[in-house]
Length: 439
Image 1 (tube, rainbow, N blue to C red):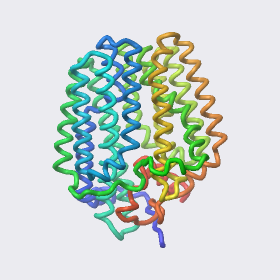
Image 2 (image 1 turned 90 degrees about the vertical axis):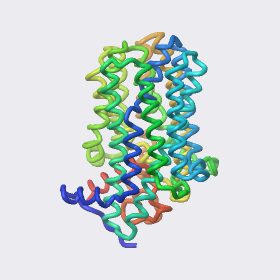
Image 3 (image 1 turned 90 degrees about the horizontal axis):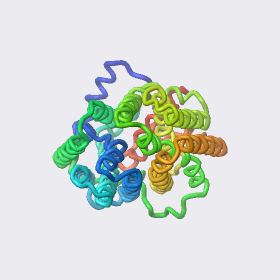
Image 4 (image 1 turned 180 degrees about the horizontal axis):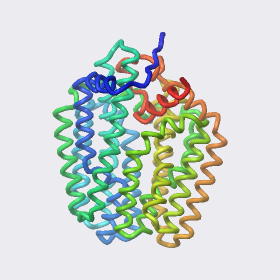
């Protein structure tokens, strides 16, 4: 099959792409914008609210553990949920349940109900995000069949808008949070905005009951995932444990005002940094980029804990975090044969979920016991992660050197509605950047 790569476009071409996205995709992106209007809660408000309600460090650790378990379960079961319900019902019901979880969080004060609300919120949020990704991809495939170069450009633009809206929503809510808004009011605003998004999803997301894309994580055939994929996922795990310390361990170390400032700086970095990230990391070997990002993240978080600095150190670890959350799933997507993409992503999600659970439970407890021990543990885990990724350098290089694993190469030619969604938004953008750097 002949393939066509697109070249960077000027302002007129960008405007043309926006018009070419089609009504279906624009409606889905509108739902994403509404849903993210106040939704940095999963990383920020859960530990703050738990402590505010008197749950203490141990209670906050339990609530964060429940959130991690719920999110992992939602990621693993999201594909089968979409298969049964379709994208519209999966998205709207997931948003409605997430709103219910946030509303519960604003009312209850005991640790067990808080943990239940966190688990519900995590599972529901993972489901609606996957449903909206699938709806975006199907809308692109249906709207632009047969235009190979244009289809690729539109896909990158649509998924770029998807990622930008997610991060911009985080920034908007972080700005509001940094003003000192009362926590109960912030959580209630989250519940209201998510409920509005649920109504919008019911009205705007295409009604057709799309099957989940083959990339949706699935536990079917998980035992058949090769050992090298599990080893690669385990190599990333230390970086994930460290990543969650920004919102688990540092929540225990910083006072309320500094923690809110840290969240604002992190959100701003996540919005701004990807504009240069993908082109920059495309020019160095993948294992080097991952190792450097891990070191920057770990060094920044350890320094933040020791110096209690919410500004400069946050810029450092946020840049590392932005690189890791873009490259790690892109590697896994890149090495997966098309038929096994869902299983590979499920293996990655399972290991990441376990790492997040360990991190969110142990981090606050260790930070409360000794800041020096917390910083030392972060540095040790970072070193382990750098060494582990270096040992899996061949797998990393393979994952980032191939087009995303559709039968025709998702970034090189048109894919139909069954194949177009085999890449995560971040994977699409990372692979596009590397392809552009090689051109």
